[in-house]
Image (cartoon, rainbow, N blue to C red; front, side, top):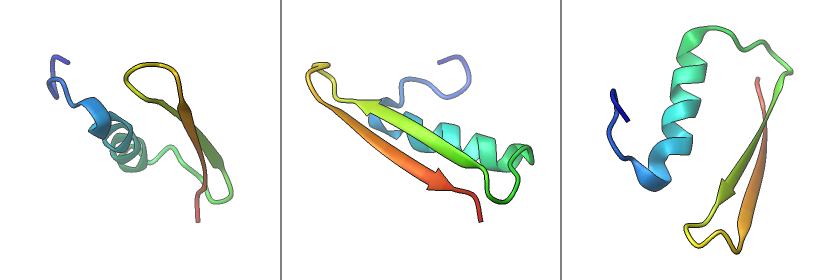
Length: 51
């Protein structure tokens, strides 16, 4: 919150951008994201592979 503010639903994409920019990812690695909706009753998952 100190650097980005309250980003709500964009926070997953902001974290991905920071991870990509860090240079820590290697080809073939996988990223599992879990995105809850605001009421915490449903959840979405995404599995990404670094290319």
